[in-house]
Length: 364
Image (cartoon, rainbow, N blue to C red; front, side, top):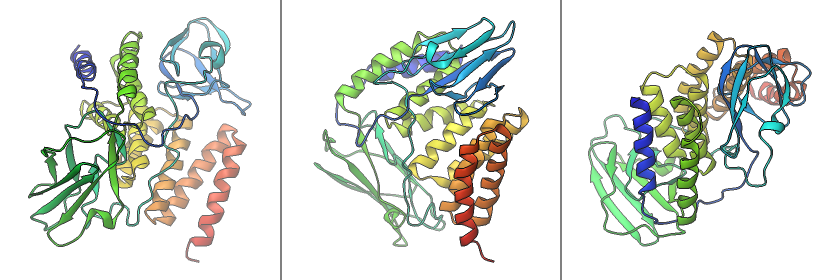
């Protein structure tokens, strides 16, 4: 009940947001996203391009070309890309497209294929921006956060963009924006933090944000109302809301939502996996790695081979960015072995190309 009240309160906040500011930049539709919200009994998945079924787990993402197989007495719920719920409770084989038809404009989409590139990824000597970072935001009432630099006692903070030229100084690694200037629709804003030793956040990468447009804010409110009506558990609704935020580039809101579940003690693999993916997407690689490690531990405990392979691939990608090439090689090799056991030859070949590249880069 407490979790449900928190979610309802969050929806209330969203439904009362003023219609200010701006369009989400560069948002493009990607593959639609359906995910399993509940599994009871013998439920299996056959992913497109594979020959065999494998055990299904709550939180797994499905394409319309995948299939489900249910044994006697089994049941499952799938939240579809249009925020409807597909209930399956009879034995047999079912194409995901029969319960979650493809649409031209899916609400839930796969996002995050374009990773943020950084010059000195998450260097602890740099006051790199943590939040808001490469995201759309829901309100212009925002808190700016950055990495605390060792021995730094003072930070200069700048917020720059059309109509805004705000500067302040603080001693702690966060500050609430208190400028009189109103953030303007259609514009992107940059956050620049400089420690008193002269090191700037821009030594790592430029970081900024935009406010959600009036049109997208209205659409989001309607979609949250629709989501609230679905017969899902509290955690599944929260996970679905995080996917919805991610689909609209509201990465900070999604991260905050999932971090709340983690704080409450969630032990669901997909919660940590999505949180790791969001951190990776905005370029917070070390934070992403921490979440992926927890997700991998949980996936191993429940013998979820699919999740293990996906997470190990992501860990390899992060370690390549962090220049931990030997660790990257070991993670990608483990992922390749997992996909080989799952019968996914396409993934095996794609990972082989990455392993070959790493072999050339590793010291002999």
